[in-house]
Length: 160
Image (cartoon, rainbow, N blue to C red):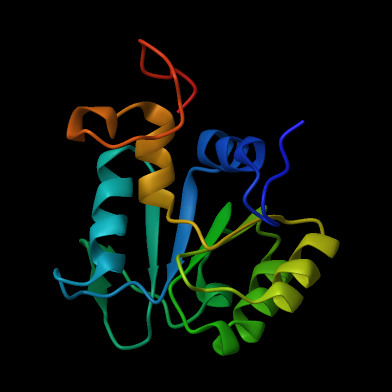
């Protein structure tokens, strides 16, 4: 059986992408040149409900932006984090407190202690991965750009 790095199990990634469609994006920027904006834009286009969480903006991607996760009226399925690793403790507290189902820490947001705390509280955790890239990889969309995805198939996955 293949061993995967902690918090990067393909089954967990697929489960989150398939079943958790309401995404609170903490640190989403209104600046179109920022990676977080592009990820949010892509996820919206793929049918996810993107909820901006950034106290610096009123609206991002045409949606109301909230100052924190606890201010969102209905709990998100996923809390997707674009913050520095040493700044996520409060976000993990909020994700656990509102009853989120999963915590997704984007590239270079690596904090083993907080990931373990979220997992112990019952959240699915993905760390040091990008939702947009993983979605495209599992859906089969990256093959058209010539990228090696590790997924061998002749069909796009109906699961995502």
